[in-house]
Image (cartoon, rainbow, N blue to C red):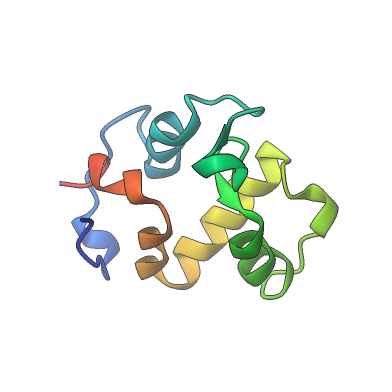
Length: 99
């Protein structure tokens, strides 16, 4: 189980030189058509629609119809981490990217 991370100072990038690229590698191997979690998770960062709506649409103003857009997922994930680094816990694979 991923420990709760609250400080960006604990990050050690492992793959591709940055954290989101590392998470993307483990979530989807960069495949924009990736589907996981029995159809609930989609695109490069494997957002569930409910998580996307809560953060990306309701909090950051992205459009619902951009849910599977890889660039939008990356931008939203960046906003999520910049706003509150403990949002890293939305990706169970993040533990592979942190030491």
